Each structure stands twice: as structure tokens, then as C-alpha cells.
Length: 175
Image 1 (cartoon, rainbow, N blue to C red):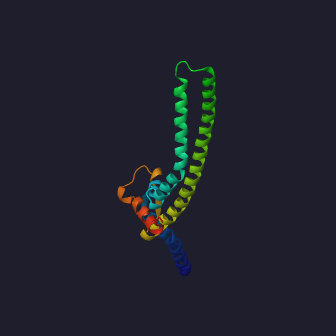
Image 2 (image 1 turned 180 degrees about the vertical axis):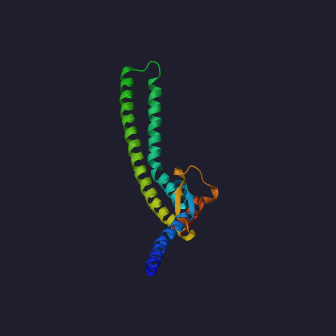
Image 3 (image 1 turned 90 degrees about the horizontal axis):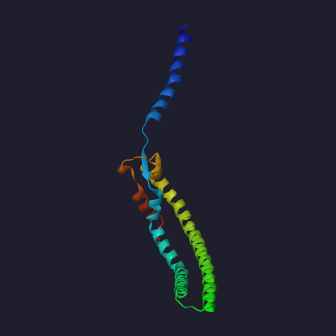
């Protein structure tokens, strides 16, 4: 009987130990960091360079759109002039309608092409930033990194946004 009671006590002690160990681990505070992922990506040298490249790439088309807008304004000014001949007015209205359609098409094409190029850059940079943040978290022992957009309150000391941008620029220097 003594052996039986002793075995039960030993089993009970072993059964309680893992629960106690798990409870101690669950209570241990997590090391948390906060990041403004959008700002971290936007502040990288690569994004700044890509923005300049995109602006230069689309400048000729933007200039063409601006020129067409100026032509439309000139047509509107001519249409407002007194004593305009009916045939001249008809021609100006036809030209204005044609140029307006052309302007709308050019604006839509420019926006679509620009958005596509921009999305390609942001997608690539976003994936790379996630890798950088993951490495930064492992190096510093963070258990979780939370984006600031979903955070109600945090202490500024927890913010690693600028550290992530610096680490990104080091890992992926703008060429």
C-alpha cells in the first residue's frame, strides 16, 4: 500500500510539473515592437529613387497632357468671344470634343501605367521590408512586431520604424 501511495504521489507530481512549467512560460512577458510599415517603406532610399525614376519616365506624357489642357482652354476662350462665325464655332466645338476625349484617354492610360509601375515597386519593396523586419525582430529578440495602423496606444520607445528603414537601406542599397 505504501508503494502504491508513493507511486500515485510521484505520478501526481509529474503530472503537475509540466502544467506549472507551461503556466510559467505563458505568463512570461512578450517582447513587443511597433512599426509603421508604410512609412518604413516610403522612407527607403530605394523608394525615393524609384519615385524619381517614375516621375522622369512619365514626364513627357504629363507634359503632353498639360499641352492638351492648354489647347482646350484656348478653345474655350475662343468660343466665348463675341461675334464668332457659326462655322468657326462648329469647328471649335468639334475640336474641343475630340481633344476632350483624347485628354480623358491619355489621363486614364497614364494613371493605369503609373499605378502598375508603382505597384510593382511597392510590392517588391514591401516583401523585402518584411524580410528585414523579420531579421531585425530575431536579432533583437522581439516576440511580435505590430503595425501602428492597428495600435491604439504604444510607448514611442517601442517604435522600430526608422531602424527598419535603416536596415532596409543597408540590405538593399539604391543603385
